[in-house]
Image 1: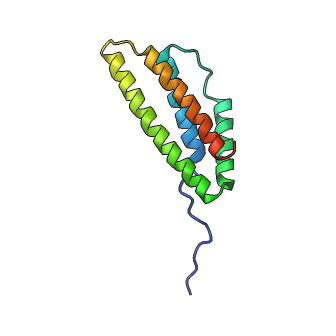
Image 2: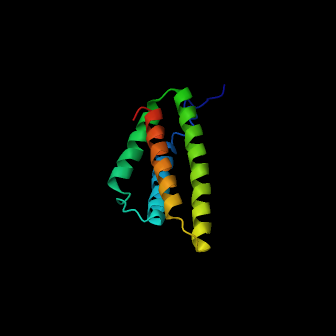
Image 3: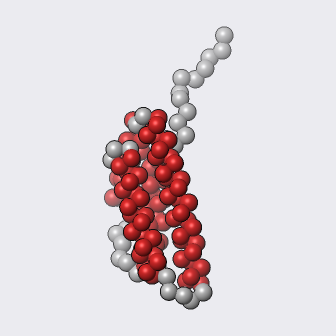
Length: 119
């Protein structure tokens, strides 16, 4: 007789709060490029990440998959946007306005991510 672990595999569980925290750090970089003042990503960001992690852990699998998909999509377009902003900046072209638009979009996406798990 074999003994099988009773722990279910949950692909995003360990990463849900971490994904939000990383996206918050990306947002801080974008705000810096945009010339916006931003609050340090410390207590509030950690609290948000903890709340998202807890909500994710208690969410139904379909909700978890939706969060994972949205987080992956958000990370992909945010990374592409930052890459473009850095190229603009390196070439001496203005990037503050584009960074402002990207920052606003990322803020909205972070709210949607949190709401997707009921935070």
